[in-house]
Amino acid sequence: MKVYLDTIGCRLNQAEIERMAREFRAAGHSLVASPTEADLAVINTCAVTAKAAADSRQRIRQLARAGARVVATGCWATLEPAHAAGLPAVTRVVPNPQKDALVADLLGLPPQAFDLEPIAREPIPGSRARTRAFIKAQDGCDNRCTFCLTTIARGPGRSRPVEEVLADIRAARRGGAQEVVLTGVHLGSWGHDLSPPRRLADLVRAVLAHTDVPRLRLSSLEPWDLDADFFALWENPRLAPSLHLPLQSGSATVLRRMARKTTPEAFARLVAAARRAIPDVAITTDLIAGFPGETEAEFAETLAFVEAMGFAGGHVFTYSERPGTAAAAMPNPVPHAMRKERNAALRAALAASAARYRRRFLGRTVTVLWESSQPQPDGTFALRGLSEHGLRVTASAQEDAWNRLTRVKIETITEDLLQATFTPDT
Picture 1 (cartoon, rainbow, N blue to C red):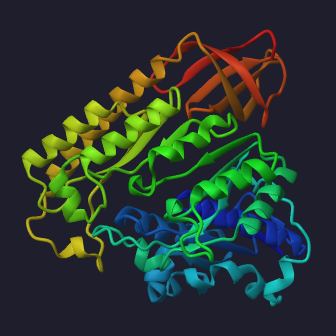
Picture 2 (picture 1 turned 90 degrees about the horizontal axis):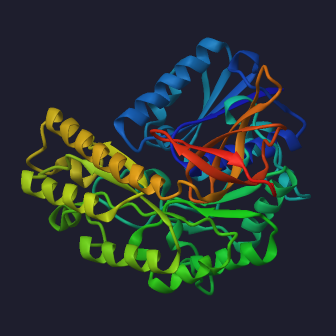
């Protein structure tokens, strides 16, 4: 059978779709780069925003038009299973609690079918081909942020045992992955539900000690899960010096309405501790523009805080009401036009601070994992890749360096790219 895999949304969705790819291949099926070639399409949907849910529905319709039978899973399909089942060509809806067994169930295999021997990871054909492997370490969330549907869609927090995570990383390494990204809905809570309880730092140390992955990166971490001692892990140079710490708002009163377990002051102290411990660490964040009741003064606090923090980048989401969340019933909604204006202002502030952060690397040498390589008419290769700090880098090379880690010198900086040349010892 020919299978097409697609995903919308977070890195955790990507990690899950990569695991499905390994299992389909292990069962003797082939993956294809286009839904028009497929007998079956599996899509991992998202519901974090109204747009993500709409994108999920649109993608399913596109898969149906391509002629494939469709299996829908993920957060949107879990929250609206009847709607998903009613879309064209959808033959099955698999809710999140049953997702880990999706491939085995579809193929009529016992759940243990893929535990018999290690399954090598290979890049998924087409646009999903990657040099980095996203590894699921944790699922679900016990937080009750008032704007978020994830707790409903994913359920309570659950940690994967260390050996399962290590096995997935070793499979990724056999498939050639040079970088591993540990992912989870609430990654910082990893280990709290194990017996005896453990902490994320224990998992990171295990990965560094028991795998040979050249570069390890952590996905989003809630700031209240971390303390200053956590940053001592970065004494190991294989741990990428980048942190994604979702803030959501720089106003203490808005954070309380969001039920976020931090304050601007606590967040600033954490960032200062990270910067003391990790030279040139790239700190990125998430922000929500136009949360219910957000006043002009509260938004001004957020904008000023973002400008003061000097983030290396981030994402800004225009608040959208998600039925079933506490925020959807809150009074004094911000007009949609104003939400968009505030989104634009926050994006501009982040873009300015990101540009300042990139400029500090001018003339410096960085290590880049090359994620794409395009042959040129003159026989050279146009490369694009990701530095250890998460910066996008381009270079021209005499040979194909795809999926290699190399040292390059940053020569010029454009709007969002660093242009580099290879160093003599590369």
